[in-house]
Image (cartoon, rainbow, N blue to C red; front, side, top):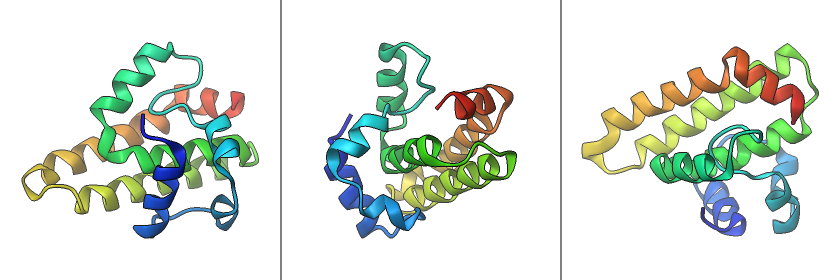
Length: 127
């Protein structure tokens, strides 16, 4: 996984959708909530592999993990933070290599489906 300060800087430079309070967080605060791609309860090796596989979306994962940690635990907020992740993944796909963009858009929607599922709701409540 990339260092959180590098991910945060890139997220800001790309103007990814994020809560304004995200920009005020220091690296230590972000590192405390960031676990890469996958729910907190999954094994670290699995999250590392998923993060590696979907590495072009890592900035979106950082924002999503921060959202999960600090959002109020309502269904409305759950939907909002997951849609934010989809928008951010789609934006990151649009700046990815042109020959990969169709696959990256599909990946973005697969990731959205996984976080907005029942298991995603449980992870959201536990965060």
